[in-house]
Amino acid sequence: MVRLEVLKDRMDDSGMTMTAIANKSGISRVTLYNKLDGRGEFKVSEISALCRVLHMSDLERDSIFFND
Image (cartoon, rainbow, N blue to C red; front, side):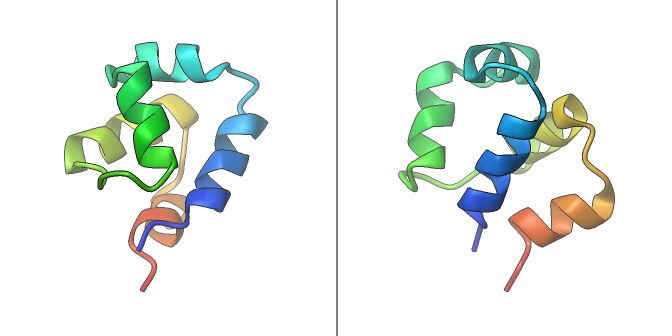
């Protein structure tokens, strides 16, 4: 299960707007908002893009997206 609150905090800490994060990651803004609200699951390509844009380490990625 994705730790959405941790992901949202990480996005806030980035200093970028949601629109900028969406644009840089190639995810539509609407899709990003929906997934952050728990409507839908992140695809592997979206996880990879968000990690690149937010400069996440593998450990951060795993703790947010692959935490069971």
